[in-house]
Image (cartoon, rainbow, N blue to C red; front, side, top):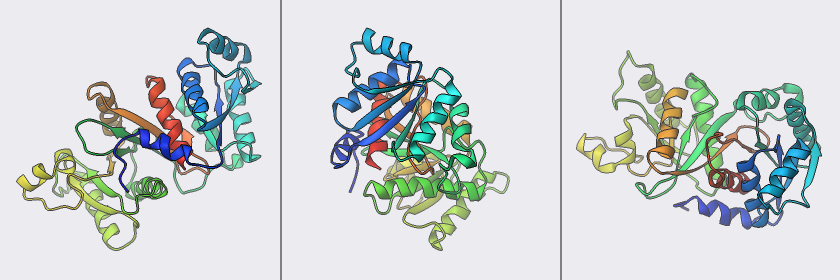
Length: 299
């Protein structure tokens, strides 16, 4: 299976027999509510809105959104709204958590509380999946928003989270490129050492269900022709599914360059928790938020 465009997430999510319950906190945000309305009207999710009820209703009315029959829970405190959402997830009343009008740090701080019982894997990580006219299929970039400067063991877990997501989407052996500024191992550049070790871990079946290669410069990951020009033979070059960035600064710049300069569309979630967490940038438009909801609903 190959996913060539983000709209395939909409098709896949619609095929689910049980419509997923999505809970958003705090929900008084224009773009978030517009994205939820689109997903709701397309029967991808059933939303539960938590937040300032007066503000939520005002946004619904002023934008003429068809959310008048949706459940709204009135909680004016942002942290208490997130905690209520987590309580409902643990009670089995919601399948997806979505970030509303709150900072990423505040939301994830509540998710990471051990007593809240949302952690599944060893590590939470962010994955953004992009569609651009300059590449023949969608590809993921991880981690651009969660882990600041991961060591090699954390990078292995970030890869595992991304591979697990791709496996659940029906892609059995996703190709993972470890991006660095050069394609050779340099003892003075820790990212290249990590990349070579991750590649070896994959060859020895320590990281499974994928094909890993690195270090590779970005041109060698994206373009097979560029790789061949440099004498690089790689199964990943020109056909990458997942790009692992060395740290958050590289990832964040890459993410925003694709969106704001490259005209790419994206969908993004947090993986590694018991449920998918829809987490997009506050600058992302309602289309990106809708596609992110659709991605979460596929899982």
